[in-house]
Amino acid sequence: MPPTRTRTHTFAAVDLGASSGRVMVAMVGPGSLRLREVHRFPNRPVRVGGTLHWDILALYGGVLDGLRAAGAAAGGRLAGVGIDSWAVDYALLDADGALLGNPVHYRDTRTDGAPEKIAAAVPPEELYAATGLQHLPFNTVFQLVAARGTPQLAAAKRLLLIPDLISYWLTGEAGTEITNASTTQLVDPRTRAWSPVVAARLGIDLGLFPPLRSPGDPAGFLRPGVLAETGLTAGGPVPVTAVGSHDTASAVVGVPADGDDFAYIATGTWSLAGLELDRPVLTEASRAANFTNELGVDGTVRYLRNIMGLWLLQECLRTWEAQGDPQDLDALLEAAARATPLRSVVDAGDPAFLAPDDMPRRIAQACVRTGQPEPRTPAAVTRCVLDSLALAHRRAVEEAQTLSGRTARTVHIVGGGAHNTLLCRLTADATGLPVVAGPAEAAALGNVLVQARAAGVVGGRLADLRALLRATQPLRYYDPAGDRTAWDEAADRIGAGTVTGTGRGTGTEA
Image 1 (cartoon, one colour):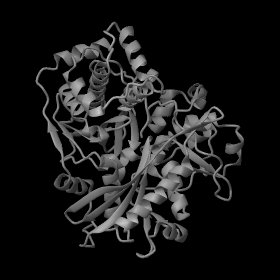
Image 2 (cartoon, helix red, strand yellow):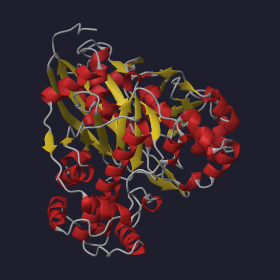
Image 3 (cartoon, one colour):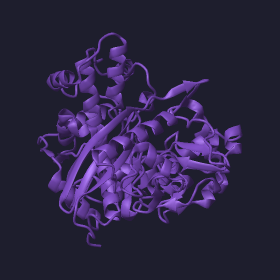
Image 4 (tube, one colour):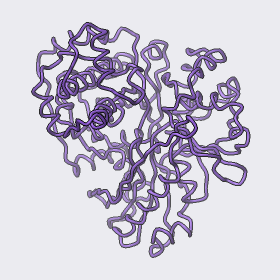
C-alpha cells in the first residue's frame, strides 16, 4: 500500500532490555528517518526471599518518564507508541486486572528440574516438532510448570508477557503479540496460533492468554490518565500499535539487508544469530543443533541460535570493578586487539556462563579444562571472549545455512555489538563473509518502522523498510581475511567445528 501521508510524523519506541530501558523518538516520512534517545533508565532486578524478580513498577515509571520526554521533544504530539522487550517472562493478573506480584526473572533458579518434568509429559523431539523452539531451561513453559501449585498462579485470571503488560497499563486493552508469544513454546510456528495439544499435555490453561495480535495491529490508545501524566494531551488520541514486541523481532526488521541472502546477528547481552525464513525448520537435526523457530514480522520465521553474547564481557567488567580493578572499555578493547589472537577460546554457549558472578574465573577454568593457556590479564580475557563469540557466530551462521538449505552471502551485525569494531572484524574473519555493522539501534528502528507503516507514513514490504534504513543509517563494512585455518583449529579445541547435525547453545533474548 502506498503511503497516505507526506509530512514527517513522530513515533515513540519503548525498548526494554535486560539491563536498561529507553524511549526513542523517530521522525519518519517518505525517504526520511531520524532517531534519537530521549530517556534511558536502569533495569535492576531485585532478589526477595531467595527469588529474583524484575522491578516492573520501576520499569513502568521509566516508560512514563520516557513518554513525557518524547512528548516534550515532539511538541506534545506523538503519532504513535510501540513497545518491545526481552522474551519469555510474564506477569500474572487477578480478575480485576491487578498485578499478582512482580514478574520472576528468567535467570532465577525456580525452573531447575522443570525441563525434566516437561520431558516426561512431552518428549523433547515431540515438543520441538510441535513448537520449533530451541531448548532453553527458562522458556515460559518451564516457568509455568515451575509455578504450578503456587497461590499466584491459582489466583491468576490473565497472563501477560512483559511488553503486553506495559501496553495494557498504557491502554487498558489486553492482547498477546505473536512474535513474543512464539517464545513461550506454546505456539505452532506453521499455523502461527496456539498449540492446544501441547498446552493440554502440559496442563497449561491457554485461557490465561488474551487474544493474539500481529505486528501492525492496533493495540489501543493511551488512557486519558496516561496522556495527562505524560503531557501528551495537545495532539488528540495517541495510538499504541503492536510491533515486533520481542526485541529481536523488531531488530530483524531493522536489518538493512538488500535481498534475502543474508544472515543476521542481533548483538547485545545476547547474540542471536541466524537467518530470516518463510517457513520453520522442524527436523530432528535442527532440534539436535538447538536452533529455534521464532516468529517474525510479515509471516517470517527467525531461524536462529541464542548465544551468550556480550554478557560474558559485561560480567567480566562488573567483576573487575567489584574487585577494585575497574576497566575503561575503549582502552580494554584496544589492548585486546593487540593480544595474541585465538590463544584460548571457550564455548560461548556453555550453560556454565549463564549465571552472574566472577566471569573471569569461570572463563579461565574453562580454558584450563580444555588444555589451553589460562588468560590472566583483562586484555587476554577480553580477547578470549571476543574470539569465542566470533567462533560461536561462525558456527551458528554455518549451521543455519546447512540445516535450512539457504545460503548467506553477507552477515549483518545489529544492536550494541555493531559498535564493537574488534568483534565485527573477528566475525568477518571467522565466518569468511563480509560483515555489515549497524544500525546499533535496530530494535528501536524496527519498532518505529512497523508503526509508521501501520499509520501509512511509509510503504509496504520489509524490503521497502530496509531500503529506507540503507538510505538513512550509518553502516560500517568489514571484509574477511582470506585464511581461516587458525579459526578451524581453534574451533576444534572446543568441539565447535563445522556442522555435523548436532550442536549446543543456550541463552535468551534481551
